[in-house]
Image (tube, rainbow, N blue to C red; front, side, top):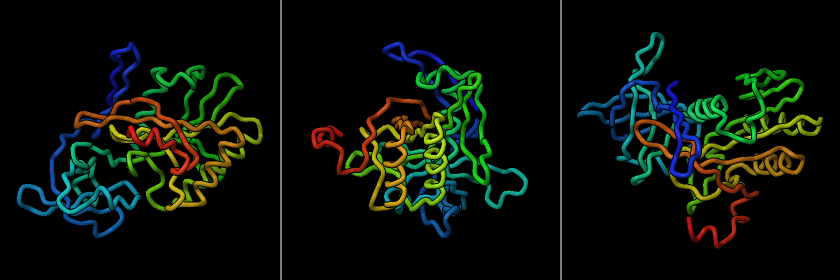
Length: 260
């Protein structure tokens, strides 16, 4: 993982991770998605296949002719030699690597760039809790916090929404956080908006009513919910501005929507 730590215009920390762990990026044109994890694209006059990690529908992003960024992945055992890294929607580059937010948050935690978690000196990743795993367990002595990270790519009228497809897995993660909070343990979820646009965040009740209900319940029992708009360019993704979180798209104030 490549990280950089510096200061921005107002003295805030800058945390950035590369899109492809150093592999050169190649531009291609989206042609089709024959399977959930497989994309076909035109590259230099030939058709190539690339692995797509994002489970979402992505129908607003993966449109015919959309510009993709691919990375070469020629590891032994792979069925495809390319990985879909990002897609352009107009001038906005949207990262499509669902592990990228975890890498970004891990870098931010190590650099103390998330002040709400700065008191924890120990960071464990991919922590097993029964049959499930949580992205991070943070600890300082007996004080612990469970932290789950979610990748967001979809915008509706300038508002970042999640999920893009029904996610029973995401609902189970919220159930774990709810149980932890009800037992007196600190718990949090961070939504990483993998693009430069998005002035607020809300769960998409029309896509997954159960997840939306679970997120409202989580908030009501004390699970902390954060969302960050994280600009993407071909060199990487940066931890950006925190944006407000609402219980539903309808709850976003009209005045805020006007400025998205």
